[in-house]
Image (cartoon, rainbow, N blue to C red; front, side, top):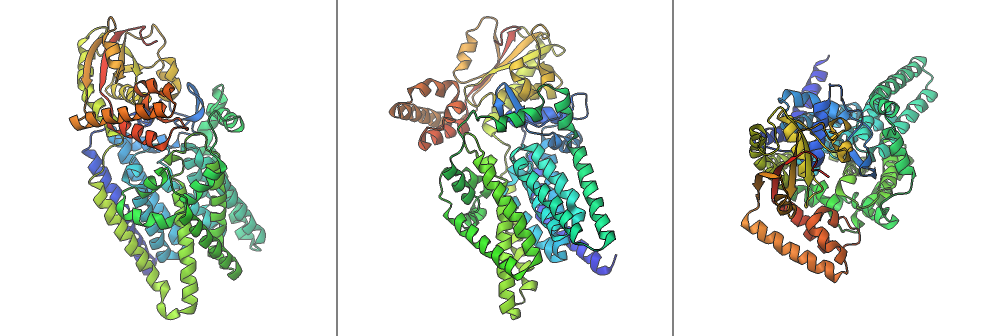
Length: 609
């Protein structure tokens, strides 16, 4: 290795340390933020805990695939496999999920910078690092430190784009990176399947095209070797889902295919709405100020209910102009980038148009990664054009310093934001943590029907707030503490089939109830209340009551009397009605953020249904 190469590597390492530092700060901050995962994060910890045992997961988290309780899962388990070592290192604490996600995203940033170095040596690494720094700021540290399946692949998608760009340029050695990164993303969250498969096809097609055009026999063999490695490694990574398909009936792959080829059970997003969402996610003009004022600007922008996307139309037009210029001038690297972006944008619009039901913010978070490279292509084209007319500006030397300055600014903003970082859904996690000591003590002391710590317990919940979020968390918290717990067959998919307890195979039941169901459970014979908490402040309780009164009044005004009782019985479910005015949905969302009291009961077996 030459002195120049050594200096370049040292520069990349130092630059990586700067860009990745917010994630390290975040992991340390979260170490002091106790967390009881709920809903999907509780399901994630259950599956991470299973890795390495006889119930090692073969598929991903449950998804909106089919109808509950016979729902399908996201394609594969690789997010669980990758998080598991860090979970073990943490002593199997919930923080291990956060620690693992932070470390893996730090490694992903390093990979992005390495790919940038292959594109344009030291300057390429600096610019790629700047793109990663903006992504860290845009997605926010909560997204990048929690391995929820829509969050886990967001930076991996940038790896897919950079690596595909390299392959289209002629660097076939990174074809395996495209396949592995796209596979992990696609298995973790199904929207990446729609986007990742075309990227793999583009990369493989480009590699074969370069082989066809090459007269160098050694180069031709090298392309085949790279292709063989990529296909072989990809096949290994796809083994778990295919094993599941073989051993289970119906297999998850079949359920996914039938779901997306069949008639949707929810309303499909209108074409006009899909186009609007598409352009909103290209709106770098509106995004710019948010990157300075919001700790998670991408999440914020994706979650906005309105917006016409005019800024995105402008950016799209600029990108088209940049692409036309690149092809007219035969600028090889820019042409390769534009081919990748054209493929990504076409699939992005197709993916958005296939959304069923509500357009949740997390369904389109990945699109911001594509937008960052669209912006990069426009800026790069502008710099090349300016440099051709004003060589005295020495843009080739100055642009990396500008990129570095942007990266430093957003990185400092991310570090500052890390000190205010909290766990996800604290209004759900906090109360669950509050009731756990009394619940554990009651089980150990044999209160009511409980038989002590060596018994087997079925966990049941009746949740008025958020579709059983804390119930899944209760299963996870008890299991992490060493108790033998399970659920009714109804929850076989979210809690996993091997945690189902048939009647007669457990000693007692542990019930979690919220809101109006608490008094109903208190009136039941044989039920012993062992824990209760209402963690809301007086102001929060007053605000909740105000919002509830407003929602009920507005529902009557809108002729939706059918939803009035649902507000107190299934608030989140009521908020999903696609025909509700936005002000009602916003009020319901604020009620969910405030939360409700919860109580834990010990009940005799046979009382769950």
